[in-house]
Image 1 (cartoon, rainbow, N blue to C red):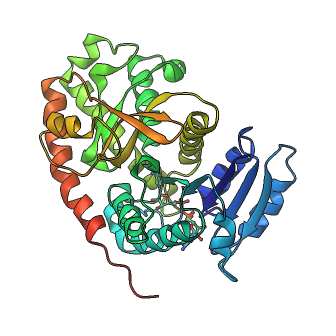
Image 2: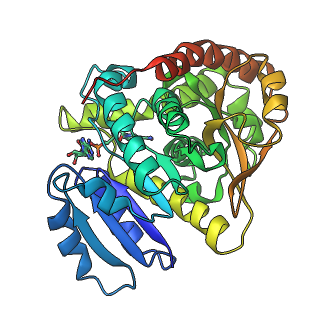
Length: 334
Ligand code: NAI
């Protein structure tokens, strides 16, 4: 029996993400929470003939706590998305408040749940969750996971396209580490499997363009939607994929490796990452080994080349202040 909850379930990401979780055979109960329309989305999804039983909740009458009660996994795409010209950081003030409120509700109703944070800026909202949970006395860093999967998905799509075999996108695995915003997104092209042809990696213009497209791919969507939001459908797919990895590890006995933005104190290996990146950052997106209880090992970044080392330095520089902003955030009194 696995209960999954989506907070922000009526939004652009929330609706298709809820649909994909309703289709996940590991989910037996799906609870949808939003400040608008969650019961409507829930009723719609409840007609799909898969096992998960769906219910929707609004804030009235402690709706958040009711939605979250006993949850095993909570996915958070709640908050405002970007408009053209905005960076993810511009969203901080509004979304940090929403995240702090939701973290408190999770602490009250589902203190043992996995928490998957999609709300931007992820580099700062994950620390907001951690700090709120610490104050509530129920912080488990092994179960707090910033979702960077869309960067990984984009990396394989864009690499396959540059290689000239766009249909091979699913075959490419390219680790993406660092953070989830512009220059903090560090695709490790030299670790691609299958390998990216040397003719592309050694062509500086092609390589720079590829890295830039992975780092700023979100802007393509914001621009194309022209004021009507940011990535929603690709994010829903990426979020559901990541949620499924967590569920497989926690409830189907699998051990899986992916990347996620986490507290480097979550498990063994975090101190080695600080040495690898040459900085004492509290959070970083790293290779994580997921098991029954969440992050069971933090794996090394591994071999990178000089160009990736330069990008790493830029990512580290930008991440520090974003993390600090999240750590220092004080929610406005209710
Ligand atoms: P949206 O505006 O379509 O949906 C957000 C939903 O959150 C709305 O339904 C809204 O009513 C709800 N909401 C607002 N305050 C809430 C609260 N206190 N409790 C519960 N629900 C609340 O936005 P969209 O496009 O779905 O994006 C959501 C977030 O995901 C944004 O912050 C966006 O920047 C982020 N995002 C993250 C990505 C990632 O890779 N991690 C990729 C794309 C977007």
